Length: 376
Image 1 (cartoon, rainbow, N blue to C red):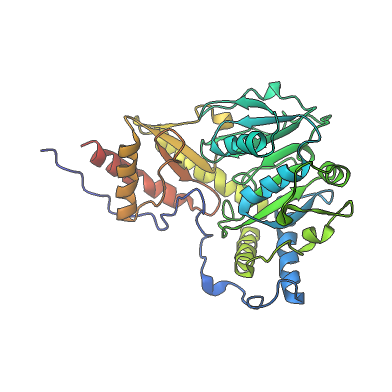
Image 2: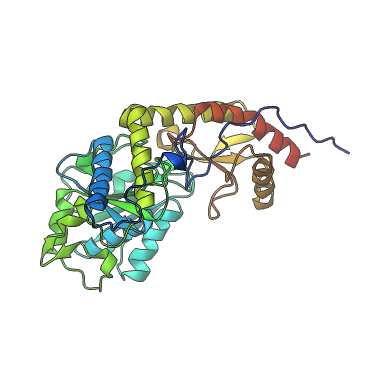
């Protein structure tokens, strides 16, 4: 009988490697959250002040130009992206890019829910579609960073400056980890639960001037739920982008987001967050390169995510990955690192800014232990 290996002696200090909700910022504690806005109306002076402060911090950290509006909306990133689709699509032809499950979700929405006939440009998990084939006379839907495949667009160079369609970027695993060229983005969405390590349930919607023009000059043929309505009497509802949310937000989640944003400022703002993500991804890449049984699902490093890093495991199937991840969870070495349910069997390790590089390094021996145990 094969003797099972002994577990390593040292655990990662914070074994939180989930790709959403992600690790809280280092040093986070609920006791440090401001509570004066709790139990108050979000439309009270303090409520609106805190919501506006949150928006101002996001603008500052994202280096968002004054040309772009930023608002807090319901439904996490999904709600924000669907709000954009429901309110702006239908005016022009649509191109939808899909190389992982969330991109496929936007294809399903466009085809089955909105009844559109989009041009669909697909690639398999681990690959990126040919971006040069995108027709920018159409509205283009894409994920900046494919959370479930570990594949991202390399930059914004492929987005045409002279586009007549709108660029819709699902950027939920990208903002605060990449330098986003905002002049290329007409619509962007994300949620606090990714790179900031905030709480779920709320989305953030960013609109460039061309998106605002679309909203004010186009009315969809389908009905719009109240939580999607961004226009009143033919004009953008500006209050949504000044902290006057469409429906009631969780002020506790807002305070948590503010806490994360203030932490982000303390580590160097956007540049500091990007540097932390870069360091984490580099540390994980070293672990992969040192192990013959471990690989990257995204083979091309130019389009490989540095936040939601998806890994292949030699000989893996669903049962093996379940056992592998279960061992690490039980040992308290790594939580929630099994790959996404629709992706090829493998591991997915979050390397965003709220993770400490030392914990990525400490994870290496535990990956060896789990692999040796499940293959013994």
